[in-house]
Image 1 (tube, one colour):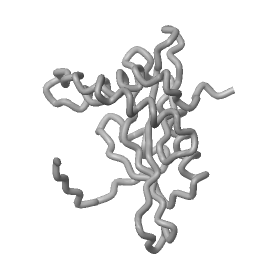
Image 2 (tube, one colour):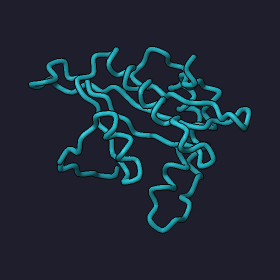
Image 3 (cartoon, helix red, strand yellow):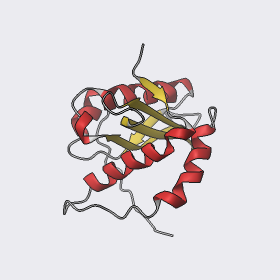
Image 4 (cartoon, one colour):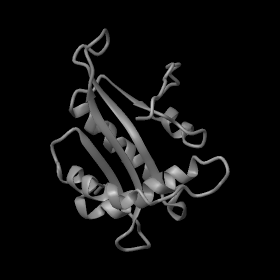
Length: 158
């Protein structure tokens, strides 16, 4: 029996807690980012977690030492882009949140969640999967077959 399960609406608070851990881990100064966005995000997240057949999936591992808490989280979406060589159907997986509770690291939970999400993408016909890797997480993704992509990404905040 797998430790990994699909996240449920009642996991939303814990999903946000782990996402905050991931966000904070990316800050170069070691400080914590504001968490005031959680309350506004919670209702939408609960709705998305309730959609079992949509284009959004979150996979989690329950914390073995803290009932009601999550140990690890992986979240992704399936997007459509116009097809191209190598991906004629235009389905692309995007992983945007991978986090493990600090006291549950080095147990294989993130890997197990990633493998479940990758299987979910494959079952839906994704031609490839994109993610942004931190330096610390890159070895995990490389071991799963990811390669660096010299994508010249740009961003516009709206």
